[in-house]
Image 1: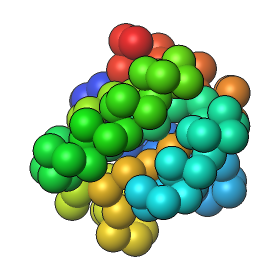
Image 2: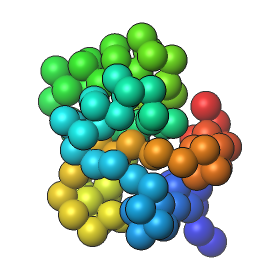
Image 3: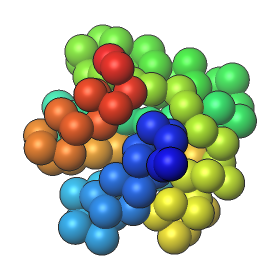
Image 4: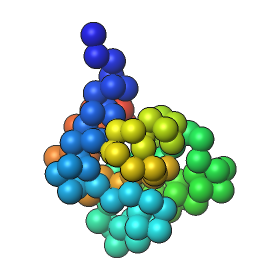
Length: 102
């Protein structure tokens, strides 16, 4: 039985392969400011400062943010070491929101 978390991580990998994902703090902040980001996922083990900075920006621009999964889980799902993943596509974002219940 595939867990909901596993589905989310699989979808993250799919979004990465489809080129609908921006990763890393600087690029994610840029897309949030440009209001192009549809949903942001931040690792639970990111620094408090990073979580606060991203959460505050997302709140300001009214972009959903989920602090979920560890850095290792996110990195494994997308194939490179990252703490922040930003979904840039409405279709993927809609599916993530359903799975994340946000």
